[in-house]
Length: 187
Image 1 (cartoon, rainbow, N blue to C red):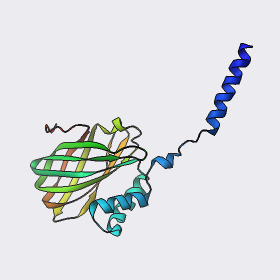
Image 2 (cartoon, rainbow, N blue to C red; image 1 turned 90 degrees about the horizontal axis):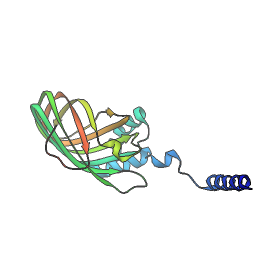
Image 3 (tube, helix red, strand yellow; image 1 turned 30 degrees about the horizontal axis):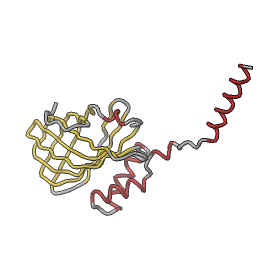
């Protein structure tokens, strides 16, 4: 009798699981049109200009499962600092405030203020974002432009797109630290 009761319970549980709708993996990612529209609205660029940058990243990385939009400021004279604040946007979740900072060193001089829009890949859980992402960058800002690079750490990939104003040129190495709280200490 006990065995038949367990068997019936197991069959009932399987039946419930079989009819329970599950979200497809694609339902948790953003397609090219969604990202192009969000980035165009954020940057204030025409869709065509933003679409070229988005298409390049999608070709390399596929569909992201999140994105970050925010603002940052940076400056350097050989040694540089970068600080930013923004929002982590995920499907089926409320936006979350995020902060980033990081030092750099290299042949780099100048300063800039940028709008920051980063595609996030393989995030799965929010806490995977809060880590250090090594970077090597080359930049040349004079008035405006859009640049894209890739940062990878712990299985998570960030593809930041920046556009801004300022006067800055150089090549540097450093890292970007993502966090839940603002911290002015750059290391």
